Image 1 (cartoon, rainbow, N blue to C red):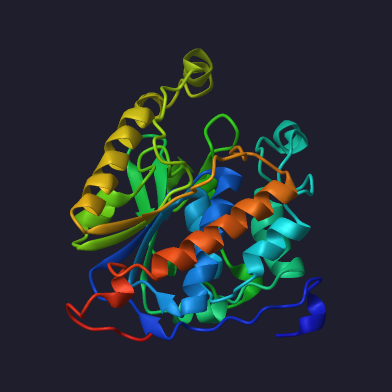
Image 2: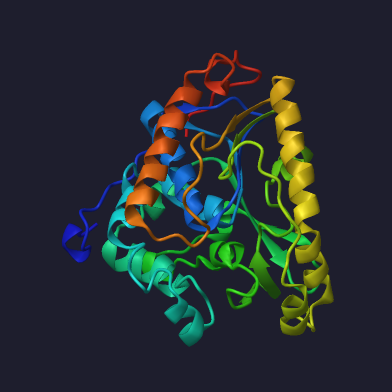
Length: 317
């Protein structure tokens, strides 16, 4: 790695020292720039040296997990400090000129290639299963991509298309064409991917949310616009219109699992002051630090998986 090729001081990745028990999952909600709360939580996990054998994420949850898996503490905070306020990261100008509110080329090409090093070697070396959820515009069903789908021989060739698709919000992003699919935001069909985690046989779930306790998702309000823009994709329209029902089913499921001792939920304790597209750097850093502190507290809980006797084994990354 040539440190002179990056504007920010490169943070080299490091594999974790402790793998959580087999059957333990990390489940990640999205939330746009609210997802920097989750990035703060990951800081606490990296401090504790812990990694999960299974991670399922959508949208910003999946995007911010890239840095966690690559073992680079402080990298996501640098992104907030230096680049989220840049109009190329998020702006109405992007939406008008390029069809997407978020500047995905800037976020997933320019930043990791020129500004803030992303350690792909460590990412590839982590022996975990990492699922990134997207929605198929033609069927309205969730399509999951594996960790190997973010792979190449060189940094310049890394294809983040699955991550971009997972982050691409309907009406605010262009459809992503990848692997024969037409894809958008994974948070539409699996806003909290707890059901996929259970399907895959996991027994304990650490769920990181980006909404306060008591939140209930409301029905989508721009129905006419949605139907006009996606008239060729009726199944996508149905999925977006049903999203609130899915979310309001998955959230109570997480809370029930927590009551049963089968989950730990980490979510913002203070009243959120950041929207999905918020760019107030001070507020975002405060949210990031809240996530860091909440993650530290969660790791110390007696029922956090790091303290659970081995069901099978603690494999090292």
